[in-house]
Amino acid sequence: MPQPTPPGHFAVFPFIFRQPAMPLTFELIAQAALELTARRISARQGPRLPEICRPADVEDGWQIQQEVSRRLALPVGGWKTALPSPGKLVAAPIYAANIRRDLACAVPAGPAGPAADSAQAEPELAFVLARDLPTRAEPYTEAEVDAAVGSVHAALEICASRYLDHAGLAFADMLADGLVNSGLWLGPALAAPEAAAFELAWQIENEPVQTSAARHPDGHPRAPLYWLVNFLRGRGIGLQAGQAVITGSYAGVLALPLGRRVTLDYGPMARFEVTFSA
Image (cartoon, rainbow, N blue to C red; front, top):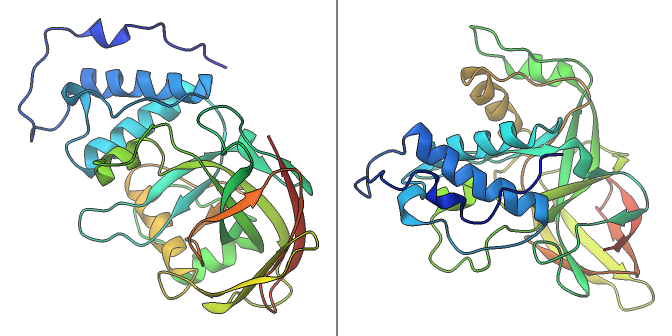
């Protein structure tokens, strides 16, 4: 794994200036990516990026995010996505090393990881590909994407930021950092077709059961998958067999305690247990 960039690397390009609304140059994209890469490697958080290399829009954010991936040089095991909206582009890689399947799930420790006693997790579905979807000129149809999906799993996105404070952050800042993704827990394959809504229930050991009316934010959990395949195709990025795509949280973020067994019930689709540890 690459080593953290030494302190003071923001001085690499000391004489570059830009107007706030101007797109970032490659040198400034690299400068921002150096800092975010170092934070991932060292599991530390930091302030908002300096204004000189702060993303001005979602395209800047996307370019910084992709430069972080190039510098980390880690295999991509999946993607997180949601349907785009004005000013928002929801696509970020999930690195294979951060995808867990064991009932005892270790999550990142340190300042950029969970709070002292809990992991931040989003209940989602993961679509695992059984065949490649390589880049090509023509768009993929929904039927072609469906045919490439090998299985659908209950999943939990593990969330952590490389920023100390989200107050004042623009969406482009979040996109540059991978949209708060820190990993993925991949649970059992679904016992029933994926649903747009269900009653989510979870229980922490012998405590009372908690419930929430779970609803997919984009109406159908496959809609963002169809969009992502063709967005990445247009950027010259293919998807590979074995990669998992999550498409949005059904119930926001759950704070799940470390070191205690948690049982989650996704209605008719799946029921499973997991224990998080740092």
